[in-house]
Length: 139
Image (cartoon, rainbow, N blue to C red; front, side, top):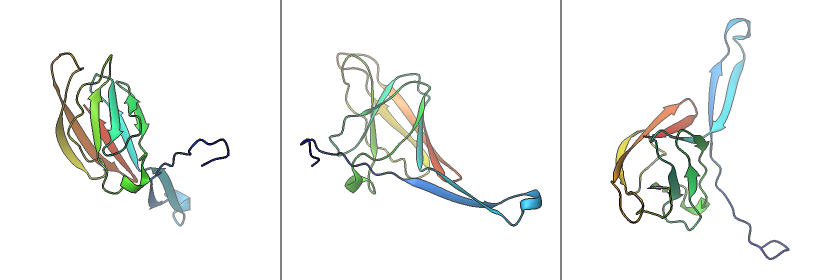
């Protein structure tokens, strides 16, 4: 605990590293890139709430069309962690089944509409590795 009595929240930051040789006259130089390990992009057309499964940390709002770096809010759960999604709005719908963003692949999860009705949406989760970063597109 800090001096004011409030608790400090820890976060698990993950970064990826890639190396490549430079071109041209600098061919003997090795370029090192340090980047966020996981970047999420919301291409679903709906504002989504994302949370780490098993944590009590408030969810992250990922607006339609936006992207952000994802870092695990509960470090002890990070290795086996998965995400869950919900459509954002005036109330919470049910959270989707858990899905993985630390391995490449395509997944489909059902995201329910808001509590009180609406049509469920199948959310496609596409995870691709580009150099040092895993890009997760939710569409």
